[in-house]
Image: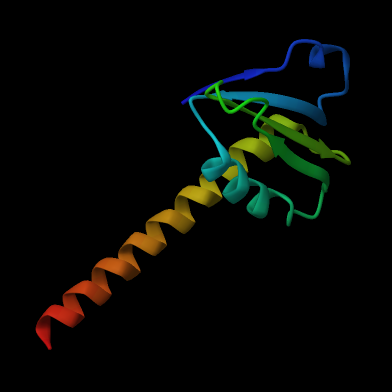
Length: 100
């Protein structure tokens, strides 16, 4: 996954940033938005896919005090934990079903 900041954001506060994810879409954007928008310090969190022919997603974070990059890193780690938990539960249920 390649992530960069949207040009022009370097002039805004570190708590307000838009990140460009290459080769990503609504799948990651919606899941990440759902997790990050629940953080207490987050004022706004959203994403767009500028054009269906382009394989990129813009992800915006605006926070009260915490730097946006820290929030993004935390969100990605939390999303990974959710995915790992989901896979573990799925595999357990498949094994339990196979035993019956």
